[in-house]
Image (cartoon, rainbow, N blue to C red):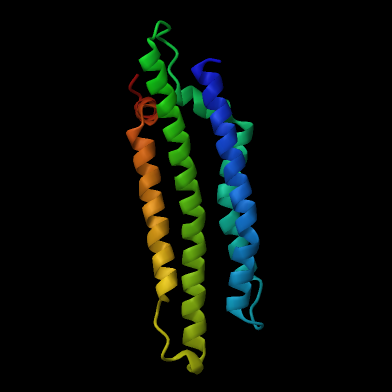
Length: 176
């Protein structure tokens, strides 16, 4: 199996993981947003949850159906006589790129969820006098937002720190 085939396989697996993680998070998002909105709410919490779910779902489906496009950017097959250490380094770079991409996609989904939840929380607090003494942000929510931010930073670092992502950035900038 060459690098390009292996990277396509890894990208497909990452796509499946992103799709499954998104689909398992959708019910939680919908229930949380709809319950927080209350019974007088319109369709906006449901639409927010659906839109927040579409981004990672589309990214995951693109990885499943179009892994060759991303694999062509990640893998450079111009040099054919590579040592085993070069091969291992390339495989590691591919795996780290895929893992970083998963972290970024997952953090993106979580970030959209947290923005929607905080906006809804602020609207509920502002509209009801019974919540006048409530803090603007719950401690658990803050901790989860920090964790989402840390996950995004780690994902970006994995993407940018791997050899495959460096090739991708070089090709995107027009350098070969």
